[in-house]
Length: 53
Image: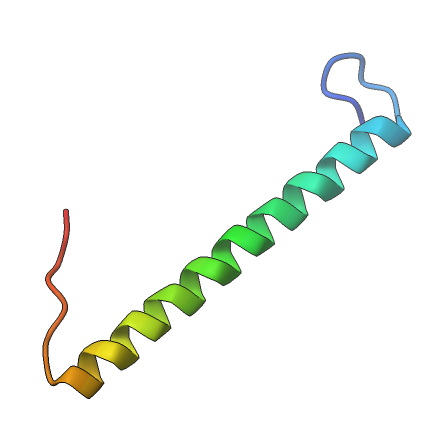
């Protein structure tokens, strides 16, 4: 990866990029599972989820 500060390839920049990618994947994956779970619970209860803004 290229360091944003100096423009050179650095293993540290590559590791940081990989860490950020993993964080995004974990966050997005967990969020999708929680939404799916809440929808299943709402369907089982026969209720509707309120839209939050």
